[in-house]
Length: 392
Image (cartoon, rainbow, N blue to C red; front, side, top):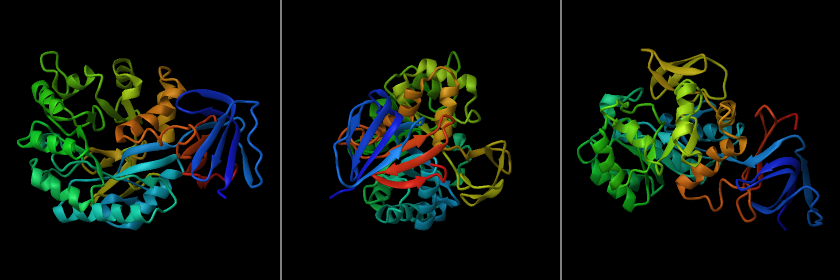
């Protein structure tokens, strides 16, 4: 018989309601029951009780855009590096992730895809690997940012199909600049293959963005970063995104990539259920140190931000629990909504909201328990405790 675990006494956020002093009854890999305070769990012989009194109990976090963590990085093209990422981010409440591939030489991108696939087959008891996020290579060199412009390609449907085949159909999300020649055909092909397509690293005009949206773009890679800015006579990428309520956006909520005042602007303009928190994290995330190599280049951490040697912002050391805390600190996002931005919203983007991103009977038992300061005390994936702090 499957093991039964009851997490009891905490404030449970199911994604549908908040239950003070509620309990989760977990049998095997699934949520069996969600109980209000005072309701009794069914009597069973083999039960583990976890007392979460004074804690937040929430759906596990889903990070759809991250490059590294714990000393591992997708550019290493090594399944062990992906495993290090998975285990590191689990310590901060992430239960499912999309390791993200940088643009690079063709063989290196294929190598990174192969490494992620291999890690998917051998789940390393960390955050689950749901698939692959391709940040390019069909991006605009004018907006390359920290990506290596020399490896960006004009959109090509045959190249896309080769990447998809190499991934064994595990590419879940891809970023494309819609203004580039051939982009519309690539976007339509992604839609046909059920691959979510985002705009990113793009200098598109309003008119070019409309063409991209009509072709199938419905998501934005790290909103505000690497995108053509808005002018009152030139809406550009950002203006088009902000007035379209149906497009979801990724936000690096470290208050460095996007100024706190601009985060407030986004919150006021975009519905909360269209904002997904991401980390865009690099390999040093979760480790000590301030200098390391990522994507084959030396980078330095200063004041919580990662820079290339020329001063270009190159990613983050953000974790999902801190992203949630930062959103709550704006005073405009209730904790319940911030938790959804880290779980249910990305689950919907991936089309897995019926069993991920929520704590309801029948859903996967992906759970994070945090204290009032957003420190993670326990992370559970499909009923398995994959991280537990020494004081909990």
